[in-house]
Length: 209
Ligand code: GRF
Image 1: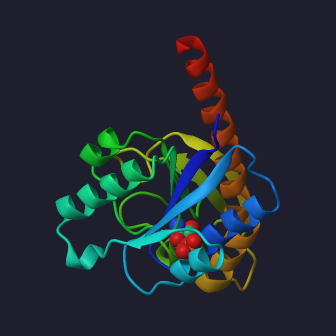
Image 2 (image 1 turned 90 degrees about the vertical axis):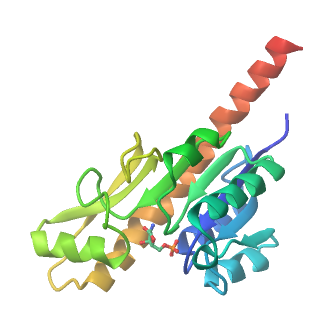
C-alpha cells in the first residue's frame, strides 16, 4: 500500500509547513508524503518553502474568488491529487460545513493555544497571544484538533503546554508557542494519523481483495 498523500493549506510564513518538511526529511513520517501545498494568497513565503522542498504547490487566491468557487477549486485540487490527509497550517479561511462534508479525507488544524481556551471565531495569529497575555495566565500552549464546522471546535488530538514568561510580548510568546509547541505536535500528529490511515487502508484492501 502506498504512502498517504498529505496536503498542507497555508496563508503566510509557513513555519508549520517547514516543521512538517523537516520532520519528513528526518524520516519521522514513514507512512505519509507531503504531496501538495495550497496557498490562499499569492507570494506567501510558505510557497517558497514548498518550492525548496520540491513539493507541488497551487495558489487559490481567496481575495479573487467568491467563497463557493474558492472551495470548489480546493475540493477539485485535493481530489485530483488523491489527498488522504488535509493539514491546515496558518490557513486563514473558515471552511464551510458543506466543504468539510465533501472532502474525502480527515482535516486537522494547528491552533496556537490550549483549546478550548483562546479559540473560536476571531482567535488567530497574534490576537491569540494578546488575549493570553491580557488574561494573565501562566501557561498557554498549542493544540492539534480535527476540523469540523465549528471554528476550532473539533476533537482535540494533541496538546502541548508552553510557559508564559514575565516580560513576554505577543511576538515573543508566539515564537515560543511555535518553537516549543506547534512545530513539535503537528509533525507528530501527522505521522500518527498517516500510520493509522495507512493501516486502515491496507486492512480494507485486504478485506475486499
Ligand atoms: C501560527 O501561529 C499558527 O499557530 C497559526 O498561524 C500562525 C502562522 O503559522 N495557525 P505559519 O508560520 O504560517 O505556519
